[in-house]
Image (tube, rainbow, N blue to C red; front, side, top):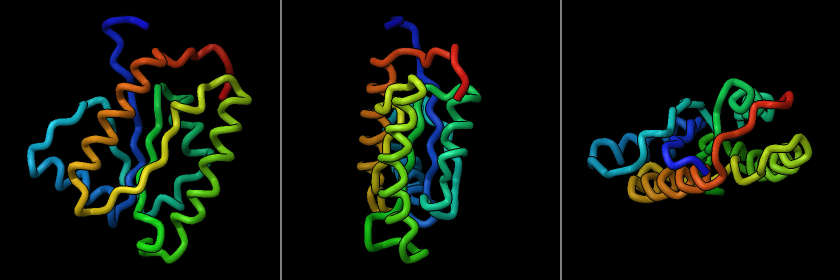
Length: 139
């Protein structure tokens, strides 16, 4: 691991819960790493495997998907779809030579600013420990 490595993390955040939680973390001036670049999506269920793979292909060292808690999805079952999709996608990443730990799914509500900051901090440290993603193969 390089001492100066700062991971590039793409965060796909649900508009209704996780994005609002991130906004609350910012307005509360909570401290968390600035490594994350947020992409606001209407629902975590709209984060397709192709979108995650594209993030890795275009330089992300880690991808964080944050959605509403199970049962709280504004689109009824979007987060159920995500909960089924992400484990399969993690296996696919492993198959193509990317550590599955570089993809993480968490549920963060709009009132959980502290949880948002904690998840981003933990994930950033995990990816930092993994080191830069080797860009040798095709994703």
